[in-house]
Length: 75
Image (cartoon, rainbow, N blue to C red):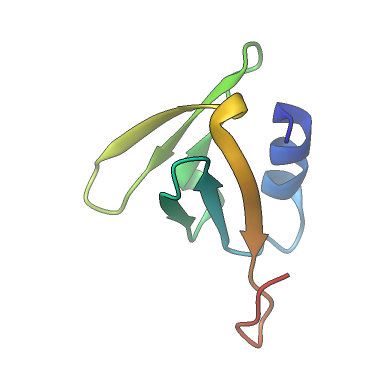
């Protein structure tokens, strides 16, 4: 996984909710693109949960990105 690949998911139109799965098995849901922040440089990003909790994640710790279709199935 690269920052470029993550940015491509973020920029898809229409946006599809996604789940970022880390190497430790933690899953972070991103239901809206405003909750995923990718700086213009670097190899880290920020996921903000609905309650304001923030997760600063290095791209090297991402195992996979799962997207959901309108039917709710994983891609």
